[in-house]
Length: 332
Image (cartoon, rainbow, N blue to C red):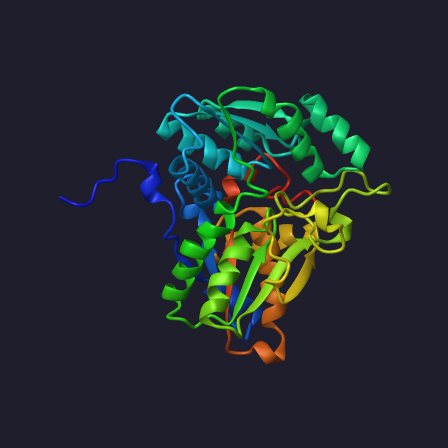
């Protein structure tokens, strides 16, 4: 009899690398784009890795016990991963989630039996965001110190500062890429949310190849809220890390790991996401399209001809069907 798994925790990781052969040919790219399809994780995103590792590290340290409630703030995918793993391990789960995330994210988290609270429904978060001009890091700290600290049986997972977040990418994502390319990886391209993926993966790959070139992505200025454009079409789950105060960047983000920062605007991310669905049959999210767009531009540079560019694609496009991402009548 073949191997039978007993828990979804056994299914996390070991996601495939796929060369975007048709897309490369269409654009006549002189470098190879090798995309890491993280939607092959059991809950269709790279955040399954961090969710599992953060919970299991807390278990090893005796920080959580049966019956406890795990709590996290998230733009969606971490909440989904934590909700699923909490369910299979018998923990309760509560998530404070950004109001503007897709309807699919709300529905999936609730399906796992979690309690879902919008950020706008928590007064401490709202007050702190107003006082600090939108500092999400400060709002999370206020939630932790003023609300969660007063409750019994609560474990705040805290992906923004939990070292188990980048650690799992150093121990799994990086080694998988190295093994699947037989050590032939020249450039790593990854978007930045918490910074865990690029920090951990970049650290491992640079330990194997000090000449590895790491490109970290953030949204372009036109894809971020501003007084002139308070509600832009955003690249969900991707956040600025350069050009903002260090205290507004997640603690786990290694600011020395990347060699280049690349700013991507939402229209480019949407266009490329729609395109690779048609050329190579992969349905991915906006941050994936942003990463492929940046990798495409980097591949066109003369010095990168013949190189292998590994691109992290964080999640599935199925999480975006209620958004404008695949509505081709919608132009950003």
